[in-house]
Structure formats: C-alpha cells, structure tokens
Image (cartoon, rainbow, N blue to C red; front, side, top):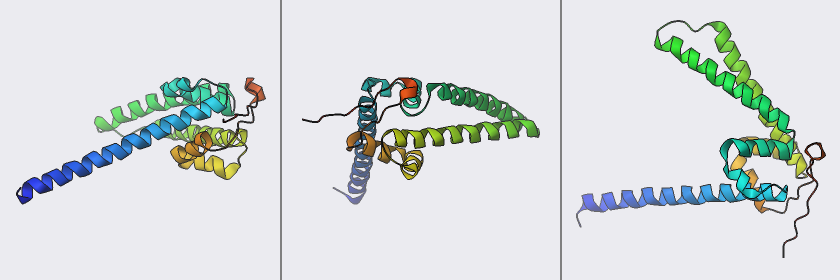
Length: 168
C-alpha cells in the first residue's frame, strides 16, 4: 500500500469514527430527553416530535401557554428576518424598525427559554445554576435529568402530579 492510499484510508477511518461518535451522542440525547418525559408522566415518544416536544417541555416545566408566546415570537422573527434579507439583497438600507423588532423578538425568545429552563430545573428539584446549565449545555444537563436520579416534583398548574420512579 503506497502512502497516498494509506493516508486516504486513515482519513476515511477518522471521518467514520467522528460520525460514529456523533451518532452515539445523538442517540444518548434522544434517550435522555425521552426519560425526562417519562419521569414527568408524559409518553416518551412525544419527545421525538419537533415542535410538539417543545410544547410538552413547556407543559412539564412551566405553562404551555408560554410556548405559544415563544412560538408566535419565532414566527414574527422569521418573517422580519426574511424581509431584512430582502432589503440587503437589493442593496438597500434595512429599516431601523425591522432590525429593532427582530432583535426584540430574539431577546424575548431567549428570555422565555431561559426562564423555562430554570423552571424545568426547579421541577426536578434543582436550582438556578442547573437551569443555566440546561440553557447553555442542554444535552449534558438533559442527560443528568433523564438518566440520573432526579425525580419530577410535579407541575400543578398543568395538572402534572409529582412522580416517584421506582427502579427494580
């Protein structure tokens, strides 16, 4: 085997190893999110449906009505961003009101998600720092919630009782 072939085989092996590790990480994230839903008394398969899983997460953590506010803000932000790109492609100056509206929507969505993650941490008996961890390092902290010994304390506002999971 010449050096070029050996190098190509090495690069292919490196790329395949990387994708294998990413696939394992992705499966771990799915399983941990599924387990968080199970601990809260919501069917785990609901964690696999993109927008509905976010709705259920808001229901587990806070109030599902806040999901609709964040969802509407996301739609407004997407619409405004589309209009901003239309101005920039035509070489025109972007109206200040559009830029301001896009920024305000983005900040509002970030604030709502931050509060939701802090509330999710509280529903599992953790503090504000854990909620910040959920916000900035979500997959790792979801693994701690789902695969660890954290127990769901309930959300009476949404009719979800506290659940104690018994492992045999």
